[in-house]
Image (cartoon, rainbow, N blue to C red; front, top):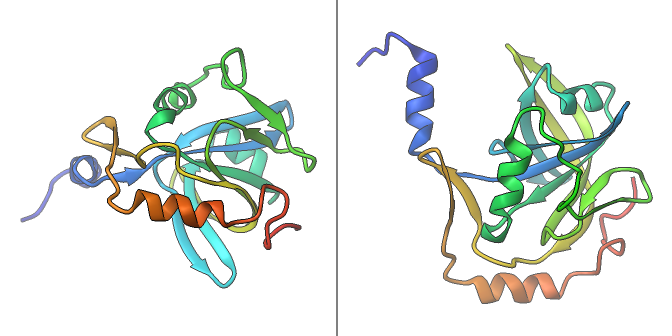
Length: 186
């Protein structure tokens, strides 16, 4: 079967393909910037790295243009409101109702999100109107699950049940506290 509109076909195909939801934050020239992303993926563990995409003209892309750092907040279903707030174009993302703090290294950290990774940009690849960014994880800022993993599917945020949630939480509890990560530094 041939699709006459590949972009439309891609959107339709991915409507039924769940994607984990994250909020990405960085410090731009005018202060903190952030966006909701469903493109975050693990790249590997040697070095620990992730990838994500953003529009080339986004404020986040501007903040990361020369490399730099970004905090990847992996959301669960208790963070649905946060995901929605950071997805609205032009919205005030760091206003009232959003608890955050600047890390000693300058990046904005959403302190209520259970799992966050501070990352250093390794590479930026232009893909049409988007940028594909690879980033090395340099610090774990929490590794705990407060609810079910949040995914975007069928144009909606949904929590996904995890059978071994207790094992995930136990493993997270055994990890060092934020700032004491074996990946700390960078």
